[in-house]
Image (cartoon, rainbow, N blue to C red; front, side, top):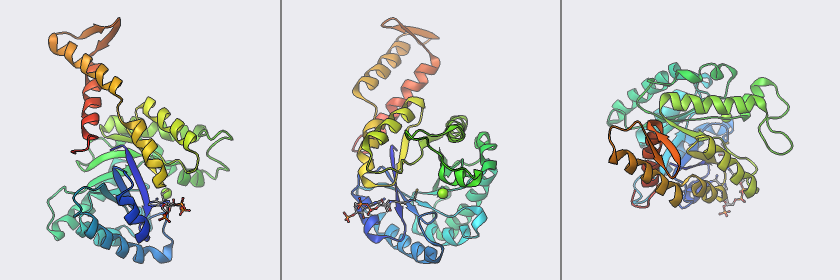
Length: 294
Ligand code: COA
Ligand code: MG
């Protein structure tokens, strides 16, 4: 999945619009975009939308962002949404693998009650929203089979730090948030799950979004979250492997296939070793997952 579009879970109009946005996944939000007095209503709206949307023939994957464990709302959210069978849960303010295990157990109980297959719902965790979470970014490996991705956020973290800003005048993240971004990337790689880049909030600035997408892809992120439908096309474009990248990956795989005992091969004057082979396979798998018949 390349693009993950956030939609406030209390807006039927935006929820409908998300279905034709071109996003690979929708993040139906019950957390930060919903005022405290609207939480119950947003749950109802989200559940009604899910029941309808999941039966659509061709649709994005549907995730619900629930409220974090410290809010006292997690159980109410899961009681409502698991039975509506979304594809997964986005788990905010995660503090390491132990918190994911906790979330997994809560989902498992509801899956059983709803008669869903065990493990039907995935988890994507937001891994950098508290100061403590930064120190636990390396603990996600093996926490849950549900865990499919890690992402990061700078907004809640800057509030926690008491910071005045999280980006400089040119829109680049300041050092504390670059650390959070790097920890997300390393944590995801250690847990062998997808690393998903954070939102770009300046949603009319396409050039800025494109730059951030390209920097994220360069560093190993394979997708990015969006807050506005206009951001989806750029994200999909940048995170879709290019024909040239696919050709290069196929050449690496072919070279190793031709010599199964080789540890390294040379192609056009460049050395490739086994990690390059693994990376080439991952790239082709992503390219295949993005073709329309999937
Ligand atoms: N998902 C689906 N549809 C969206 C959307 C979203 N995230 N954001 C905007 N739209 C729709 C609008 O409803 C509007 O529809 P219309 O043309 O049928 O009237 C259209 O896209 C154009 O929207 P626009 O007028 O450019 O923006 P806006 O001022 O209506 O909305 C935001 C701006 C930021 C409030 C809105 O993009 C939004 O709610 N984003 C998601 C916020 C969120 O979930 N945050 C939590 C994670 S950080
Ligand atoms: Mg938040």
